[in-house]
Each structure stands twice: as structure tokens, then as C-alpha cells.
Length: 98
Image (cartoon, rainbow, N blue to C red):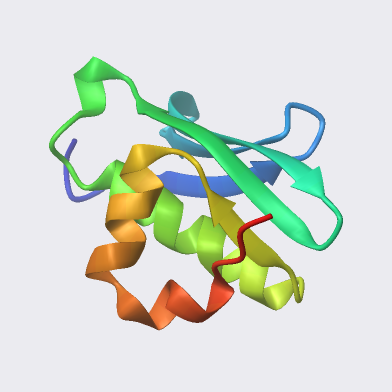
């Protein structure tokens, strides 16, 4: 990944996941399901070719920002997202468990 790579993070509601694309190529995703006013995050994955570049953290941060903009809450079942929220206390107020 160079300094000029185009990184796009988007919600793909048809696939029920947030995606990170690098130069148009899917590099990772965070699966979710909607339960009432909660976004339940079930799995996060970054392709091995893109690991170690901070894409997973960027993906999760932007996904959580989107959850906040929607006025929803997050239920993190995915260990990566649980860990991310523990390290980023600014998202703790979003967490709701069933």
C-alpha cells in the first residue's frame, strides 16, 4: 500500500457488511445484522495481503461512526471489534447488549 492508494470504506446493506476497498479491490469487511436499534457486529476480516496496515481499525472506526450517525447502538460479538472499543473509549456509549 502506498501513500496514493485510494481507500474507501462503505456500508453495503445488501451484503449486511461494512467494506474497505483499496484501489477498488475489496480488502476487508465487517459483517453485521440489524436487530431493532442495534447493529450487531458478528465478524471482521482483512485479507492477508492487506494485514498490518491499519485497515481493520480504520474500517471499524468508520463503521462505528456510521452507527452513531444513524442514531443506532452497536452490539460487538466480533472479538476484533470488542478489542477496538476497549482501546477507543469514545465508542463505549454506543455499546448495547441484548
